[in-house]
Image 1 (spheres, one colour):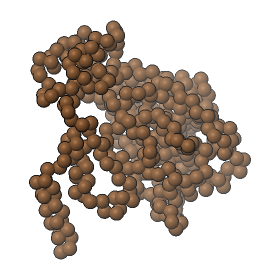
Image 2: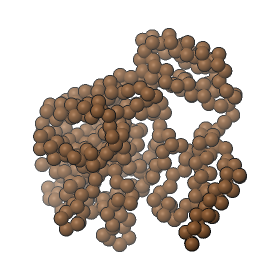
Image 3: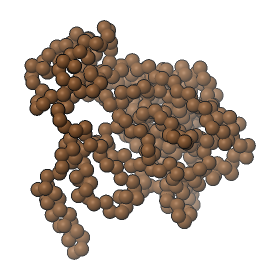
Image 4: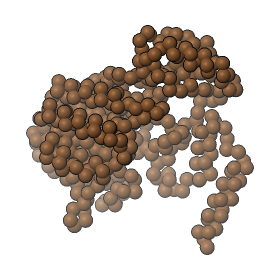
Length: 401
C-alpha cells in the first residue's frame, strides 16, 4: 500500500493579525499535484485540519474547494481525515456521509456507538480493497475513552488494541495496517511548540497497542520518525509560529505487506511566505543590523527581529530596526522579540501524564512550574505561595463541610 501522510494544516490560522489563506492555498495546490504524481492508494490527514473548532468562512471554502479538486483529480485515491484537538469534530462529521458518497472522503471525528450501546469499532476502520487497512483514530480527550474491557489495560490502551484486534480478524490476506492518531507520544521532539502556553499530555507509545505497520501521527509540528518504531509525525506543512524554523513537509510511505517495515520519503513544502528570524538567536543591535542587511533583495515572508537588551529596548533602536526593515518591502515585520541579557532561557512548562494527574499532583508545585516557565525562571514569590495555600485550605475545609 502506498499513501501520503499529512497533518496539522491549521487552515484559518492568523499570525500576528495576518491572514494566511494564500499560504494554505499554495500548499494545497502542491499537495494536489503530489497526489496526482504519486497516485497513492490513500491520502491520510491526521487531524487539525482547521485552526479553530469554528473555522472562518474563507477557511471552510478553501478546504471544500481543494478537497473536491484533489478527489476529482484522483478518483482511485481514498482520502481519510481525522479530527484533531483544534477541530470541531461534530461540525465536520455533519456532512461526512455526503463527502464519502460523492468524493470517497472518509471523515472520522468522534466515538460512535451501536444500537446496543457498544462502541462502533468499524466506524474507525477504513478498508482499502486489496491494498490495506487504515485505523483512523481522531483526537480523544482522556476521559472520553470507553471503559476498558480487559483487566490491566488503561482505557486508551484497551481502545487501540481492540481496534487492532478487529482489523486482525478482517485482514485475512496479510495486507498492510496503518493507524492514525492525533496525540503527543513520550520522547517526541516538540521543538517549536510554546510549552509556556500549551500543556501537552504525553502518552507512552506502548498504550497505542501492537499490530500496526505504520503509525501516522499528528499534533506535533516537527517532522520526525520516532526511534526504533514505525511511528512518524509528518509535521505541519507550514509553520504556525516563528519557533517552527525548520523544513516542513509531507510524507510518502510504501508498505509491501503486513509485517514489513515502511519505506518513508519526505516531500518538502515550498512556503510562499516563509518565516525569517533576524538573527536566528537574539543578538545585540549590531548583530540585528547585520542580519537584516544580509536578507537577499526581493525576499518575501514574515519577519521577527530577535534583539537582546539589558533592561528595555531603547526607542531609537526600535525606530532604527523598523526603518531598516522598510528597505525589504517583501518582508512583513510581525514583532520585535526582546530578550533580556542574563536571563536564562524560558523554562519549559512541566507536563503531566494522565496517571500523574490522577495521583493528585501538588497544585502548589504546578503553580510554581507555571510561574517559572512564564517569568524567565524566577521562583513564585512566597507571598503568592501563602495566598495559594490559604485558598487550597479553604476549599478543602468547604469540601469536608
